[in-house]
Image (cartoon, rainbow, N blue to C red):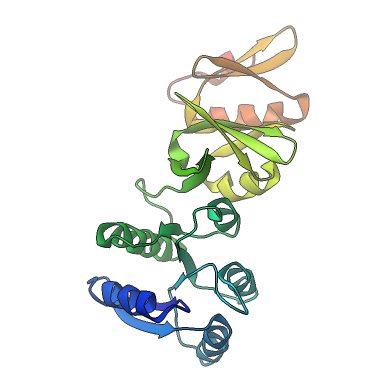
Length: 255
């Protein structure tokens, strides 16, 4: 059973959120707080005493310590709880993702959407105790002219850096997100993403071929051929040999 903390300075919103959380059979204990600073002090005492907290359901805009700063402070704990943002504002979704939030809910919160957030928390807590399952995935919030769309990581074929932004490519679309490529590389390494160039990150699950042309290495991803830098060629080749050994003889990969 999950143990969670709900933080919102608006009392009616806090009462509604705690009611919905207590109604979820996966949640065993819910504590509410109407001030982020007080919640942080209580959380510090709880963790210092060896007690467990699985997740914080957190508003963004609050007087004094806001939700984003609260989330940043959580990274200082040895075993911080997962974070789910619950807010009326959709313009903080990308920042929330960069901070490692499990989910981002918009008010008024629909019970079925909250249930999905609880599921994601339960999966994330379970993943911390063992290897991720096949159904584990991550949603990336992207801004589409005032709307926020959540793009599943498993649909991303490759990522290309554009200054302070990255462009996420899927089979049917691409999305520009303000985020450094290095952050995604570290975050998605265990999900099979590999750097093939200083500006390109590729999902190994979507690579169908490695070829050599005039001394240059390229990988086939969907309908695109992407160049592999000399620096990253051996790493990519070794990865594909391990992943596709039964389908592709290693000798063919040597060109």
